[in-house]
Image 1 (cartoon, one colour):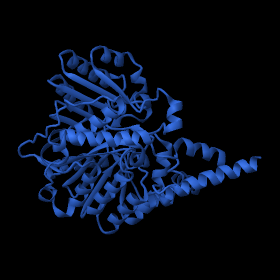
Image 2 (cartoon, rainbow, N blue to C red):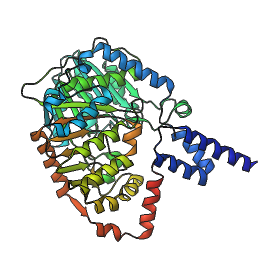
Image 3 (cartoon, rainbow, N blue to C red):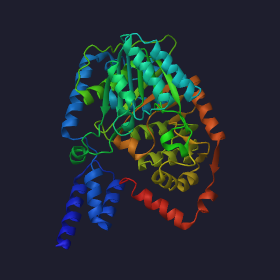
Image 4 (cartoon, helix red, strand yellow):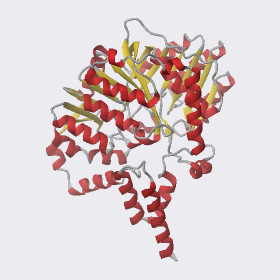
Length: 474
C-alpha cells in the first residue's frame, strides 16, 4: 500500500514538474531531489509552495485591471518613447527592457533626492504628508507600531481629518500585527481608506488555491501625484524591534518629483483595485515634469506579471557595465542568469563589487549566498560583508551614471514571489551620490578573500551547497 502511494506521489509530481515550461532546470532539479528523497514531505511542500500562482481568477483580474488602467491613464503608457534621446546607446538595453515589463518608458524631467539617512527620510515623508492637499497613497510590506509607524499613522490621520483622501495598504504577512492594532482601527475611524494586500484572513483557502508566501513587498508613498518615495525602507524604526538582534536595519530612500510619480501611482492603483475591487476613476495620473530634471522610469513586477522579468532586468543591466558595477543587497540567492552575468562582467574587466550583510536574519539565505562566493571571487569580483547591522539597502550602480534603487533583492523570492517596485535612472550626480553611500557601506564592511573561502571547513561548504541546491524549494 505504502509502495503504491510512494509511486503515485513520485510519478504524479514528477510529471507535473516536467509539464511546467516556466521552471528553470535548477528549480526542476531541486524539486526532483526533494520529492525523490522525501516523497511525502516533498509532495506537501510542492502542493504548498511549488506553483508561483495566485490563481487563474487573480491572473485574469490583474490583466483586466491593467487594461482598464491603460484606458484610463493612457498618457502614462503612451508617453513619447525618447529613451534613445535621453540615454547613451551603451546603456539603453536596460532601460528598454525595464519598459517592456510594465510599459513605463524613460521620462525626462525628474528630480531624485537621496535621503541622508532613515530618520531624515521619514521626517521629510511626514512633512510631505502634512502638506498634502488632495491625496496620500501609502503601501508597505512591513508597518510596525513603533516610533516611525506611529508618527506616520498620526500624520495620515491628521491629513484625513482635514479632508485629504488617504489610502493605506499593507501586506497581510509583513504587517499582520499592525493590522490588528488599535492604531489601524484609529486610521479607519478617522476616515483613512485601508486595505490588506494578500490577506491571511482565510489561510486554508489561500493554501488550497494559491501560495501563502506570495507577498506584496513594495514600498510606495505618493503625495498629490507630485511626490513619491522609492527605496528599501519599510515603515519601521532602524532598531526593527521584531528582529532587534540584527539591528540596526540600514536602508536607503529617495524622494522623487516629476513624471515617474504617475508611474508609481499606476502601480499603487493596480494593487489597490486588485485588493479592494474599488475603481479609482477620478484618480489623477497627470505626468508632470520638473525643469532640468533627469531621465528615469519605474519598474514593478510580481507573481501576476511576466515571470523572470526581474532577473532578466538585472542581467541586462549588468551586461551593460563597462568599468564599474556595485551592488548592495541583504538577500543574495541569484538564479543562473544573474550569477553568470556577474561572473562574465568580472571576467571582462569590470570592477564588480558586491556588498552583503555579515550577519543575516535568514540562515537559509546566509548559507545559500556564501555558496556562490568562490565562483564570484575566482571570476575577479570583490565581496564585502557589512558588519554594522543588517544592510537592507538594495542598490545597483553602473559606471557612475546608471542606478537602480528600490525594493527588489537579488534572491529568488524577489525574482518570482513578491510584488516589487524599483526606480531606474540615468544621471551622473545622483549615481555618484548613491556610489558614495555604497562606499560608506564598504568602509563598514569586511572584505572576503578567496583564501578565506577555501579555508572554510568541508562540512560548512557542503552545508552551503546543499542549501543552495534546494534553494528554489525554500
